[in-house]
Amino acid sequence: MTATSRVEVGAAVSNNLAMTWDEIQTLQLEVAREVGAAYGLRAEIAEPKDPNTSAIEVTPVAVVKRWGIFGHRPQLREIGVAFHRQDEPYGSVGYWVDLNELDKLDHSAYQRGIETSIRNGVEILIQHKQNR
Image 1 (cartoon, rainbow, N blue to C red):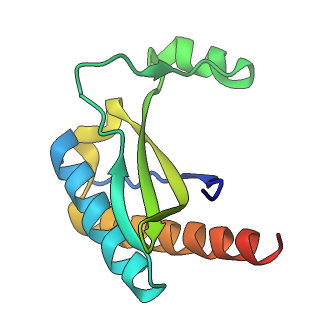
Image 2: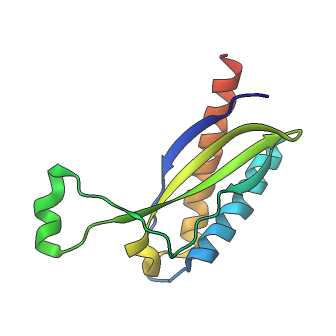
Image 3: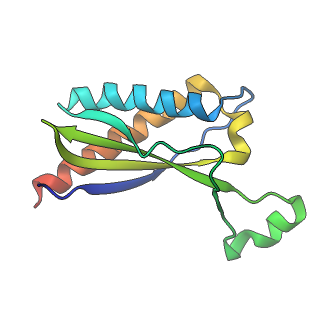
């Protein structure tokens, strides 16, 4: 069995159109399958996240004062995409989504941003595998 690699990539695109958590996961999977196919990889959501589970509330020290004024602290939930080559685990790429921003995500802008992020993440995985 091959050990898997993990790449964390942040992706946030905000506009005025809302997306639901299910739409975000579905879009993520569609884009990951297209990108993965170009590299001979099969993609699937790694541990689908239930929107009712708790998210991580971020409170970085450097910006707590700013958030205190506006009362906004990001609540992040990860979407993980696992890639496989010939049914062997190849690696995974993780993305963090701010749940407070779901109502501002634009489908087409998010898709363009996430496609670039997934492609970069897969290329990093491939380089990591080649350097072993």
